[in-house]
Length: 254
Image 1 (cartoon, rainbow, N blue to C red):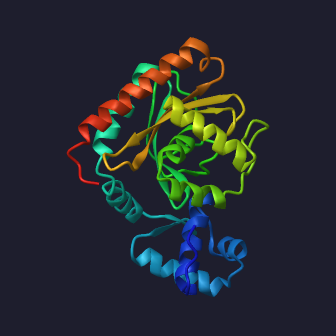
Image 2: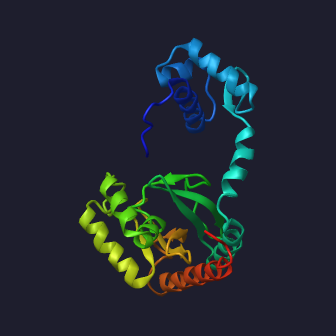
């Protein structure tokens, strides 16, 4: 994440409050003050301003995120001009595969889930729209890294911390670079239990005419189903979805 040269303390405190409420769902003034190591008076003043503008609401003496964020999320999604194309194909992919299908973009070195759809056999995970993840251990992350401009890829790989989530998670830059070469050769990336034990993901990039990458589409399912011929079949479904998106996005100026 980019570091601000001259961060404004009051703004940072407000954002920290929002982050805490997002993580804990609802909190009181004392809880927030303890969590953020800030005085209760400061917390109360910030909450009053956020509440006045619709960013938090107060219920039974505690605070929750407010509906203003719904309006903001609508405008954030509209930044991505292929969003409507993506939703149709991800919905179809989830229906055809029966699994969990996602579209993810890269923002500030993280993979951000922009849309998801669930098939009738989809596993239940913590993934939600807006969920952020490191790029090195997900199928979508590897697909995005493999096809982004080399200078940007080297910059992101150089800054990765390589947190290990399971025993299968890639742990070195050399391993990652070697796997990204395979992704470029095959056009498909895999997450073989690198994020959550028992779950496998397959993903492919959605590429723009200028050589950049809009994001990546993936399917996630349990190891019992995501193997052998079934995994090959799902990979083909992903390629088909990506192909449709790319063909229909040719008229979009990036």
